[in-house]
Image 1: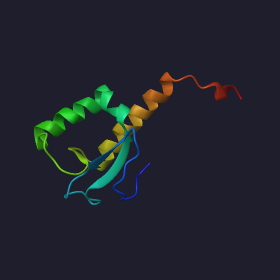
Image 2 (image 1 turned 120 degrees about the vertical axis):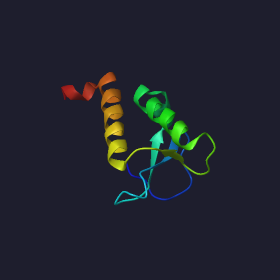
Image 3 (image 1 turned 90 degrees about the horizontal axis):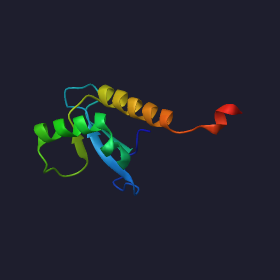
Image 4 (image 1 turned 180 degrees about the horizontal axis):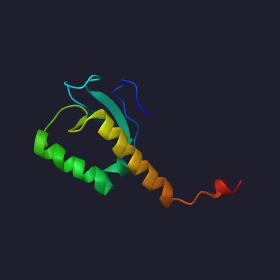
Length: 92
């Protein structure tokens, strides 16, 4: 799900910038579903982003966490979301 560097983001999705200059990989850009904004885990990260960066920034939303922490958070949200949906194909 790692995205290319295109500036255009599909409707219903949001670009975020994760990582730091101290990390080996530096900053990385991801595109996530807007539905993440309503998830409690992601909300805590947004609150931290406000504390660290404030509300005014240009470009993608900056998140104050490492790339690895972000990938783990995304995995948790995806796993939770998947478990809440009925999967009829499991019976096949």
